[in-house]
Length: 94
Image (tube, rainbow, N blue to C red):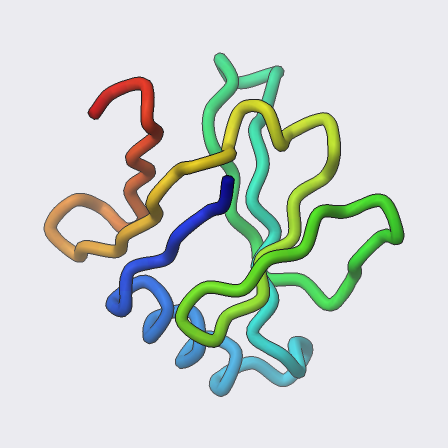
């Protein structure tokens, strides 16, 4: 079980980190927002909790809080300008 970033998504995140003065490493937090119909969330972060699940995809560290793991496991994340940014492809819709 994992989370996969496409190369395009990974490249976009790495560029965002390189352009940021606040983030030092390509680490992305993936989760869900229960207050917004369980929409997926994706944020650059420098904060990793001991309880977070940590993975790597295309040289980008991904962290997920334990409460979100059930919802985001086995999801593929892509980036497309024409789709409005990041897209999430969970296994339940494949």
